[in-house]
Image 1 (tube, rainbow over the protein chains, first blue to last red):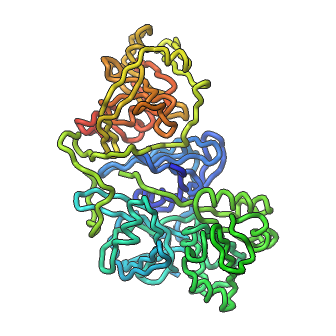
Image 2 (tube, one colour):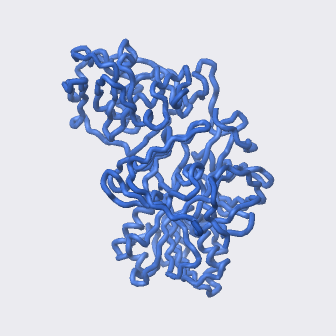
Length: 90
Length: 252
Length: 202
């Protein structure tokens, strides 16, 4: 394995399977190092039982997403206060 | 321009392959028909899901190459020799076949035609695909923002969209294209083969004083090198958007 | 298992075989896939140590030389990953957990394996005993590579392979169970592949 992570952007589809808004452009703060980041900028590890996104600054886990048949689990304890843009008219 | 902020979750839908065409020896563009496609923004991607007869299935993300245009969508897929999905897409998939798609996805690595500032596109290899969607969207919508593309490939034969890029850069619409070859260069080429460096950026890219927005897409090492060079040259990190591509999948 | 989508004509995926003696839902693989939830820690054997911490906070610790002086076993075991690949007949060399726990006074019922890089996984203490688990330092006759969890990884082959923590640095013994990295986000707390305990409630 030469490159073991990709951009958080690649989690966009799995997140849009759950949320009605795009989360990749959402901006949050890493609970560990307080760096502000768009979720698209997180380092995403996909060769794992679930998706693991880590802070590009401190490498702590920002969020984890696991999909099972008919169920999903999302743990976002690594990010505080996510801000997202809402569709026009909201 | 179609609205891309769709309300509702994204679920899988079945597209039909309308056509396929070779871009290089190893890359192929897949033209898809998608009824009720909501439109997309330049730079967005879709997830593709393949399912074997025994139920085994796997997903990958691919950038959209085309400008928004009705129910048509184009992806360009580069064949990875050890890949599981790209050999199927680049070699097996044929016109008339179904293909499961989820998208459009992403709101970060996108360019909106109403933005007036100059745009610097920097591509490594197949990282040119989402940048091509930006070039095509600009041309289709008559947008005014001047564009520069710096495109790094192994050699001339490995470059995608070569003829189209030549036409678009020669029609006076404000697109300039600079190639950087890492392995083989054409005869009488002004630069020896090599990586994108500070000198080439200074020569080919917008000066930081023009306050361009930069989109950099390619393999991880390429993207990190270029982003560092841009910041060192004085570009505002907040105006540099990057997308590293790599194998995605491993999802159940 | 998962929802079956539209079949892709002519797509068969990576070569894989169903074998009659595999746990339900598993496929046979010949290679050794590398799964990682984060950057791969590179731990030199000089910097490495392994500790067992009891529920009262007492710690028993071994450095690399001390650890390698312990009697090793050479188990040959089958691996079952929750992402559905199984690999049969893998050979490891390591110290059985019983050896390490022999001098440790505890009445704890639960254990958490902790790794360099922050990964954790939990399991009942009894699943580490009776010749069911090892701290392995060699795979297939060679030192375990960093990608596969070296210098040392936990090996608990009777549970799904995420329990076999890579880059293990210690075991914490607990009176109360404490879900680990994957167990806290949907994966089964115990993870018996023969009962297909993949997710919560399976």
